[in-house]
Amino acid sequence: MRRLIAGLTAVLLLLAPQSALASAPLEPAAVQVLNWTAGNSVTAYTTAPTQAVAGVTTIVFENSEATGNTTDMSHTLTFDLSTPGYNHDVDLNILAYPDDGSDGRHEVEVTLTPGKYRYFCAIPGHSTMVGEFIVTEDGDDTTPPTVTAAVTGTQNSDGHYLGQATVAVTATDAQSGVASVEYELDDTGFKPYTAPVVVSALGDHTVQYRATDNDGNVAPTKSVGFRVVEPPEDTTPPTVTAAVTGQQDANGNYINTARVAVTATDAGSGVKSVEYQLDGGAWTPYTTPVNVNTPGMHMLHYRATDNANNLSPEGMAHFTVVAQDTTPPTVTAAVSGTQDANGNYVGKASVALTATDAGSGVKTVEYQLDGGAWTPYTTPVEVATNGAHAVTYRATDNANNTSTPGTATFTVVPAGNDTTPPTLTGWLTGNQNARWEFIDRATLTATATDTGGIRSIEYTLDNGPWTPYTAPVPFTTPGTHTLKLRATDNAGNVAPTLTGTFTITKTPTKRPTPGTQPLH
Image 1: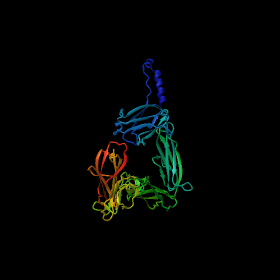
Image 2 (image 1 turned 90 degrees about the vertical axis):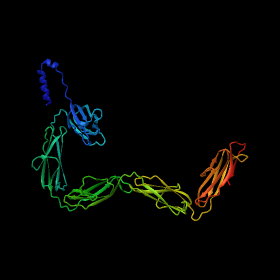
Image 3 (image 1 turned 180 degrees about the horizontal axis):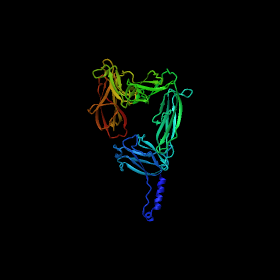
Image 4 (image 1 turned 30 degrees about the vertical axis):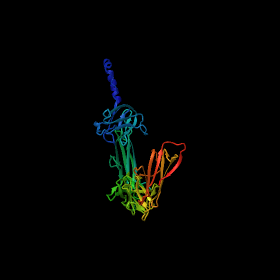
């Protein structure tokens, strides 16, 4: 057709006057335009070409409100540069969306060569937006499609099909594309082929098949022959198994989702159907693995039927689904025992820990006694040592979330009536001059002992407030001072107060001497 148009054009040029030829401008060759559009879908382009002619081509990609994009969603038109079997000579990657500054419409000029191009959307999650188009040399397709047929089914030792045979026809056309496929079973007339043909009538059969492309080229008719015979009697039901997979916690529960795959086999007449029933619901045809993501315990029953209608015994798969757990356990402590009037525990104290976790469940509970090592908790902790104590505790769940440590504090005092006050000693140390004055500083050191344990040691300087003593205390203020010291045991008995007067001077002497001054 193009050659005919070119010939007519040449004749017209010869017949045209020279003046007309001189004044008529040459028209540029028309550039082929291929259009792609996209909208709100992430599964397919709205429109796309399937065929083109080699040469200079304008690619138009529009992803706008006019093409159905009402969500400002981005799409790309990207040509494949790596998959075998396609042309890789056009590097095209257009990003378009309604507010991109071009209102979502972009044009690019490229040069196409004969062959096949593959295109796709490169936005993550849009992987099914893919297609291909064929480029021919001059647009004329004279090659018919290629057509093949495959017969499948269960066969006996002679190659005959038991009970039924299935014929699948496949047609391809590298230029204009396949327009239609037809088949004919046993000379009954050609019919459109849309799905594999199942033949169950016993005897010899012939299936003829052909295809037509979009330029009207018809492939030569081919045929395939086969025989369907009566299957042997099958009284054995199928064998069915199920496998549960997914991420599991320490207790074997499936986190978020459990995936159940059912497999059925039958060596006789073959498997006809597989079904499953989830948590007592309706029996459902099984086609793909079943994803169960509802938290809780589940039971999946499964069964299969063969082509001789033998039904397998029901199988069962039991499993538990839990939600992803990011919340640590809750832990509490309770201290029990006999207490005195001051709240101290007489003789011993018992610390019971309780941990709960509504997600994945408690895996471990641990405690520390008085800053010691972390120890697994199994039974209440008995503390009989006199004195003040601290039990720190924590718990970890099966998702490895660990609680913030908590602490329970308490004091244990001896059993019986403790009326004996502590034994208390205290002294001042530092460099002294000849007048027994402390030079620059005096440091208080104190100790107290008691069979029932010491609750506190306190001091007061110059009748100030009583202050807890925990470590040696330096005094540096010049002048004469009065110091008092006392101790209290866990039964509330107070030792006699020790008192001392001392002086601190900033005037050095030639030979200061280290000295000690006890409190009385």
